[in-house]
Length: 392
Image 1 (tube, one colour):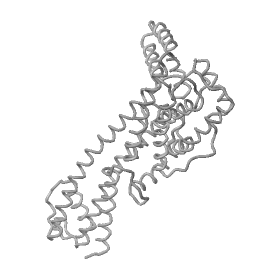
Image 2 (cartoon, rainbow, N blue to C red; image 1 turned 180 degrees about the vertical axis):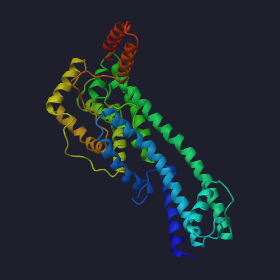
Image 3 (cartoon, rainbow, N blue to C red; image 1 turned 90 degrees about the vertical axis):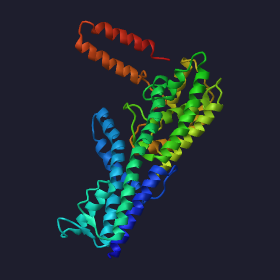
């Protein structure tokens, strides 16, 4: 018996099964740097990011980033299957490759790999017959493990894509409420109407629950963090940051609005942000470009005042807001740099567009190209509709 081969095979099976269990089945954060999943993402994400960032077109660059999440999931499953096949092949080799191979015994380990692969994927060709009782029992064990592996894969994909779909629904709904990308200023301005405080409170309640669901699903399945949103100017990180910005504004510098719900949403959203940054072992970024310098702060408050939002203009309002921002911005910056997801600004100088408006204009241009006679009327009607519905 080849003792080293047996030890290597058992170790390969152990690490592959343990990693699959922690990644798929265990409903809590998996720890350890020797896990196959951790090593895989550490090795592949950095070069993928390096290549994607050199794509000049923003849309193509974001498309390349969007490939990584689903592709990494497929490759991870392939790695688990390969580790199981290789592990059982090493164990067969340790028992002296006791198989009757019609091609002869010149390539023993290749026969072991062949038997292990056909057994794990339950092909059952029967052209290679075992001559050892121990090996027969191992083949039965591997065949059962193969059925379990297939069942795990079948059940794994719906769970992941279900969590992804639930995450993206709220992000899409935020488009009409805060723009694309979402900003705190736009979210406040679009709720500056009669009854807007109640609508904003209800929105924050929904995002408190969304943050809790994000925390639970992405702690259990961290690879969901790599899944990108449908549009290039949307992401789960920008949406979460915009909600935290809005809560900070409501707590630190907005009058006539109940701050209790803003505090609850802020606490849950910050909890999700910090825990997700710790999953990747990221250190908060302390020195970076200020997202809200004094001149931007003045612009923000001027826009809110013009929209009818009652803001605090005392000398300590900027200090209070800066104190709130320090609680989460470092973690958001670290995640943004790692995942190549830009953070949204607090306020923008130019008019804020929504994704639905961009899509509508693209369609109008396409219709104009097909039908030149009706194009001017359609284009003018669309522009009037956009201007009418730009501010909610």
